[in-house]
Amino acid sequence: MSAPSPYRVIQWATGALGGYALRGVLTRPEFRLVGALVYDPGKVGLDAAGLAGLPDCGVVTTDDVEAVLAIDADVVLHMALPAVCIGGDFAADVETICALLASGKNVITTAGFVFPQAYGPGVVERVESACRQGGSSLHGTGINPGFMSDLLPLALSGLSARLDHLYVREVSDFRGHPSRRIVADLIGFGHAPAEYAKVVRPFRAFQRGLFAESVQLVAHALGVALDEVEESDEFELAAEEFEIAAGPVRPGTVCASRWTFSGLVCGMPFMTVECVYKSDAARVRRWAEPGFSIHVQGVPQLTLTVGEVEYGLAGAAAHAVNSIPAVCAAPPGIRTLLDLPLITGRGTARLA
Image 1: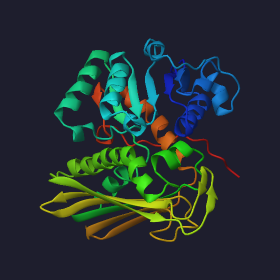
Image 2: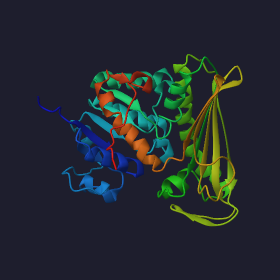
Image 3: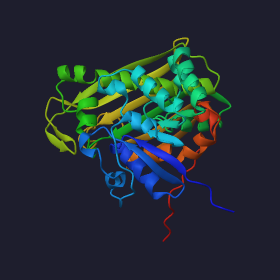
């Protein structure tokens, strides 16, 4: 019996997150890279494998969207920054993803779409129409929502006889994150308070959409109708100057932020997600230590704690790459994690 043909994959964006995914695709025999779209002009025309530190694979990078749409592929790993983060709006991402779907390619994206139903019937019908046209499926894994903020809470809910409140806390340390565009220009670290309020506006819109999707996905899965998703945020100022990988953080500038998103029913929270971002956890003592925790209040009371995830972007990329077989096998349409079998890893085991 002949071996099954590898999944033909297009890598869309090769930044910090996309680079990890690109390496995963290139080093696993069940996948074959057939295209790579880049945004950095300095990356155009290069062998894609070189961007992952690997020997040439023969796939040349391009910034030509039409050329990528014309490639015959099974799936696109769409890992661009959400348009709202770079001065655009959510509609731009919808149009890009719908064009890919209509061209006959399944799409796995980290730019939201964990639960597109959160945006209303107009977005759902637009995406479903593109899926019907291309015979394709869309699955949003999210960057951190996608496992900590929805997959694991739902898994724990299966142990509950009564569930009163779900509380998810994510605390991330950005001291080693190399991208100044993400750390300073998007999250706002290193900016004075007045400047921070302007800089973080696109990030606020991104956060609102991403975490509201996760909260609504969990509520939907558990049969709970939310009245609204309430949000709040605050920040901390640095008391001294220090360096992180993305650059300096000076006294009096923002060095940490805390965001909360609560799905309310009759004014009471059913699910709350708390996100804390620290420029350097060793310098910022306020709020919890890096890591993840999930608290299930009800019968019984449950708590799951995960320590700080080293190479968190690698985990997020692996989550998307590991989704490829399930998404390619799924019927056309929007496929949330509720529609797919539990995704398991396919990493290489290293035995002593």
